[in-house]
Image (tube, rainbow, N blue to C red):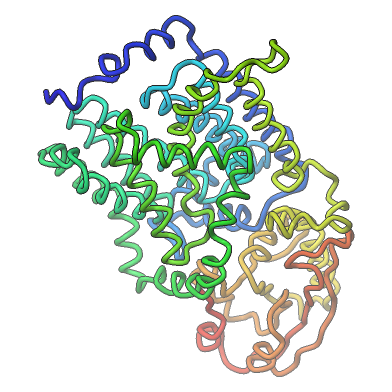
Length: 513
């Protein structure tokens, strides 16, 4: 085996001896357990976010792919629904467990990079207090498995670089393939890693049949979603086109967002981790991942991706930053001759997160969002409230219709959140299946041919008047808390006299984005 890729235990004996002598596992496990417990404690404080309602609906229509996402997240939602009977707490146990796993994996990466006991504990604490992870791991969205598989991929690449054992390419390929079934963003990481390997001596590791086998496995695992997309006209490209409309705004806020999303206390840590992994001689063997981290951050800035897209790369950067941080803290004197600098640093991490916590998790009563609009900082906070109230309003208007009219009236929703809420809560209120032109809901339409009338939730009046002979407003939704969110002030219409047939009218309702 090439001496450049000697095992980490031989390369950094002092650090490994410290870890062996005073194992940090208990502290890391405690940090992971607390992070999990905090997430679970507030998991049902408000309610479902709109994306979760959509994924629950997708889970009732299992497929190899979907308009705007691969199939893994709907599958997880379906499994949770089957096993727990639509328990919100059970649904959100999945992201809480992922956060705990990311804490442990970040600490493990720091060990591979050479951190000792203190560095590993600080790396775990950094992951647990990273604002982006605390907020994202509160809900079951595509971000949850995406961040998880990015983190596992980074660990596997570090194992490859540490040991020089090319068989790790097989595990990397399998992880990448599973990641594609969660979210397409893993492509950015893989492209960046390719650059990192190409620019360093680690490229010799790519000359292997194991890499070829890993690629075959990755493509094989990604194939079902690709087949579905091809069979349905590649709707993902329509979604990408819609997302690209926000590219200018995303670029404008991107750099600041990375600081805000992680926290002011952690920003010096991950920046030092980036510099250390790219420039330090001690990080020479890990240079491909350091370069890849920089490429990911720059690439998504240039492309105008959403600021949270590269979020999982900070697991590596925080782990890398813990190495120079540990050494720097060890050279500092205790405060008041008692308090160790590492304790002060850890306290700063926790304090920064506690200050930001009301904007990260639903720790405050929902009515507070009317006075302090925290949903402007974390959009999802406002999207977790009053969905049953909206469905109740639709049910009231539906059941108020004369029986003859009600028997031929469908329910139309303008977006997948509204449609998903009606799917989740509507049966208890005696509502029929909801239809929508938004993303995969459009593919599940059109409404039954016999339904020539509709109660339309939030649909543009101009669309309705084009397709129906008579349209009148029958209600307006207010969440009862005065909270400004996307559904506040939504109008409900009764539309009767469908001008053509649903087969002809339905294409006009389609929206992929």
